[in-house]
Figure 1: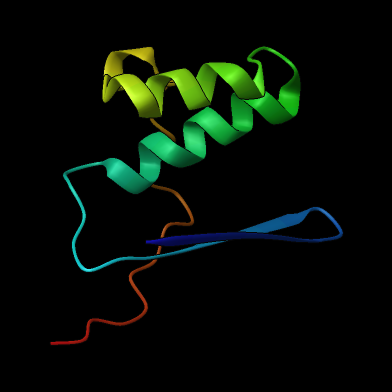
Figure 2: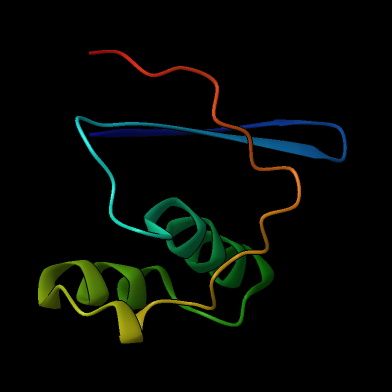
Length: 74
């Protein structure tokens, strides 16, 4: 899996690629990144959630607005 974050002005582009995704996985990752970026969550919190494999430890699920499926490879 790879996750890239780019910022251009007010726009933030998050590109996630993987063999497969769980339901709302990308939205959960983006929500956690927003919490860290806004200062309401520490980067170590995200690491702990990943290590624990506990989605309830993640930030809130980001809204679907602006989320686009760009490509599917088989």
